[in-house]
Amino acid sequence: MLSSLAELHLAYLPQLRCIWKEPTHIVNLKSLTNVEMIECKSLIYLFTLSVAQSLVQLKSLNVSDCESLKHLVITKEGDNDEISSEHDLQMHSPFLSKLESLKIESCERLEHIFPVSFTRVLVQLEEFTVKNAPQLKQVFYLDNGNEENVVAGDGKETAVIELPKLKVLRLDGLASIMSFCPDNFHSCWPALEVFTIDKCSMSFVTEVVSKVRDLQENLRILRIGSWNQLYDTVVSGLKDGFFQNLEELSITNCEAKVLFQLEDGEQQIFSLPKLKKLQELEGLCKSPTLVSSLENLTTLEISECNRLRNIFSPSLAQNLSQLQVLKIFDCGELEEIIVEEDEENQILFFQNLLQIYVERCHKIKRLCSITAAPRLQKLKTISVRDNSELEEVFGDKDVAEVMDHKEIVLPQLDWLRLHQLPSLTKFCPVGYHFIFPSLNCLLMIKRCPKMSTGFSSGQDGSVHAKAKPLKMGNRDEIADFPSQPSIDIEYYDYQIQERLPRYIENDERSIKQKEEEINTET
Image (cartoon, rainbow, N blue to C red; front, side, top):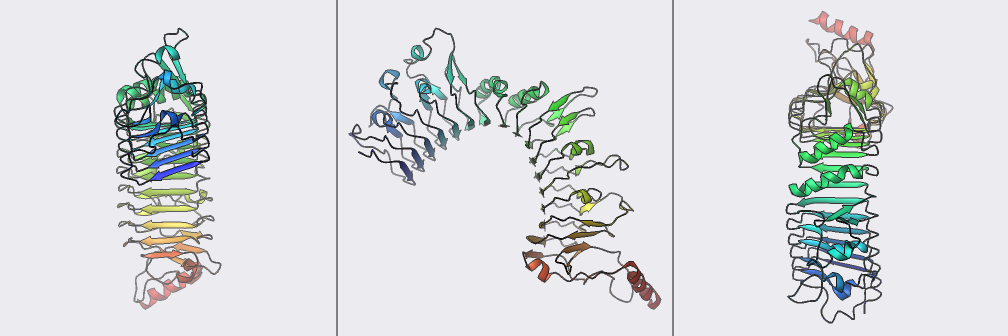
């Protein structure tokens, strides 16, 4: 019965209490490879023992929003839902031996997942995710004490529970979890590459801390949150030269203020030669002698860091030569992205930046220095939204003759969004001229009531942003293009060139002649 069934998907069945009715020994699921259960809120268990033992081909098991689920496997149906013992499981059976992915999410009554004896068959498990299971106490547990001698029968004091092919482990929202496995057992994940842990009990985090450094050889992605102890372990590991293969590091909801911090006079090299993505906390570094090896970092995301005032020094920005994506959200105290130091020693940075997003950072005055703009030759996206004190996109504290060459071309920019910026007055300082040859996806300037910079379309399809000093006289103010308001623009694709006013090329001589005419009439 059902021996050819390959996939089983059950979803949104609020009254379903069980999947199999007796007699279940005639059910043979030898071809079943994928099982998915979604929002079966009355479901108490998934499989009886006899059904589970036929799962010799199962590769993927996904269970979510089954709030009454207590067990994955039971010995028999009905009210007696005790988990089977080691002796009943017939461990020579190959069931679950091909399971590669197990995902459990929002199962509020689940207390355990597997007996420790199951580790002998989970030899192919590569991805294991458990989220929002507030009653979960252990991942692997002893079944009435019957399994300890079987698993630890080699005489060692501590038995090893090894998941030899586990590459991805995500543990999130496990408020009651006490340990990954019982006392006298040690879990081992030699192939682990991706590890996420957040909102778990303190005792469990303490256990995990001891494993972090053991994982450093293959670990590529590390995401931690909520516990300073694990954060301290990671930073200590960085100082000691661990995590050389780490490609992504995410640290959230910790009280630490700075990711890399050294005392005055202390010298240390934080080497992360393969790091490509960094989601961090309140500051990237704080040390006058710090050398941070982040030359391969491609993505930096910073959010909800309410004490962060700046992100980069020019020397650190120079190190981020491969940075492509910069996202900054909800940093209420952020005043500037790059701290300006010696103006005479300008350096090359962000030359590979493709996207920049800044949203809900209400103390920032300008996005970037005008001196940095010519270096952004690969920039494709600028998205600036809901920053109440932003006055300029590109600017300088002292704009007087900052650059000799005032025409700046951003050849790759195709997406420009300026939205809900009540203090924004200029895209760039007066006297500068920006040209966007590729701005053909989006031009949005909305809810920017003080915006004075005008945008226009050239004959070659490029978009110009330019402002000249205002000259008051008996006539209208002088401008290089029609004085159409630049607020509330939202153009897409071909609309950008068609609906913008035409850019009028004026040389300096003709402008001076117009100024002299106005002055004479005045």
